Figure: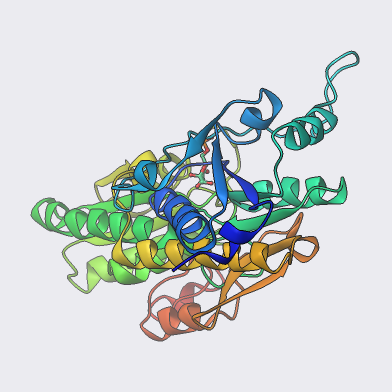
Length: 359
Ligand code: F6P
């Protein structure tokens, strides 16, 4: 069947870039955009290297159906990424990056730019749209902290990795009758820690959105020991507050627990393992749906939007609504309520150690 574009004088030419921290699923999103654009709509697609840096330096590669073959299951990003922030003020005499991007966008003959990234990327995408470029955003991050979407792709894969790691800690904690502290990524948000803590059977879950009292945590863990619980699992978000920012969250919490309970305590910082490897099935599907919907927006010239997942439906919201915001876990989030009803300690108050609330 002839693509309607093939009879058009000028098939749309779109650029795709991937920016910010990498994660599983990015290549599935690139494939979702590319195949929908090329096969369904006869568009031309170029892949821009290393996020916004590639637009500044005009580094790109044409994407074809062949180039997109076999990348659905591939971790990382075939385009590379960077944390380049073109609107970040630099010293006098430095190049005007936004104007250079706009110039290169025109010289590349782009009709639209698809920006795959987290909240920082979506803010830059909005700023570029304000300069007159046609932009569509796709939310990507293991942190799940992009405003306006229930889920970003990358989160589900990281959740599986973190949950598997916590599962493994149970066996070694039990063997040694230890308290195990595991630090989960998430930047300033606690989504990954909350979900992995629940999925992995954590006894204590500490997230940045809820302040915690070390005395409550220690009282709860001591009560568990007195009730002959052979070991405990403590799941902490990397972004929780701590007196001196120098120590990692896991360092700080494991030291305060061992000192306060007298129980042998060990720490694990999961780090970049949460960003590696092949995407989960859910992330492959979500990233593909996001990518394909981004092209639907382009076909309708509905620019300045970010694709979102809302109540399991794929939709879009304006980048203006998203820019500069971070999606944090609400204190009354249902999963927090459920954790409390299971007497999981969220660090502020626990049923088991309620008499320590004045701790
Ligand atoms: O945004 C994803 C993320 O992995 C955060 O969870 C983490 O804090 C940050 O990136 C690490 O940044 P970088 O990859 O620059 O070290």
